[in-house]
Length: 124
Image (cartoon, rainbow, N blue to C red; front, side, top):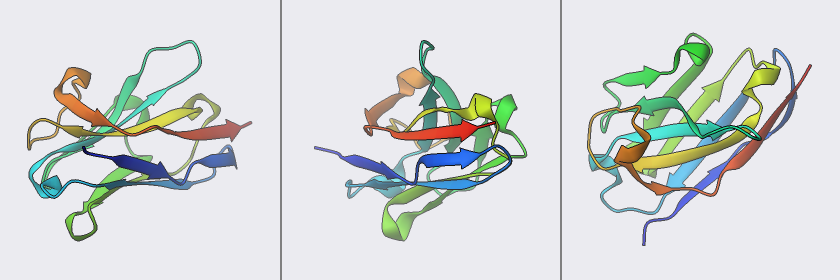
């Protein structure tokens, strides 16, 4: 069974930064793209960022471009999301997920394993 454990969430003021981490218990971690999604109260889960198997390509939703950076360390089976210039509208539960393919993708349906999420609250 593949397990994903997120950490790094918390309460931060607008304009601040957080770095989320996600450790994956999967020996074949290196083969697959990874993604971050978020879900705010009363809203559907939405794509935030994705990274290819080797980190060579990334995708971001428009609202986080130039503020968030996704990265991965395959030696540590870990994917990160550096979040800068946070805004109140970034408040959500953030989930990491493993894709069923090696290239980055924003399609939620192509992610087959999910973490339990970490809460991010940005105060104004």
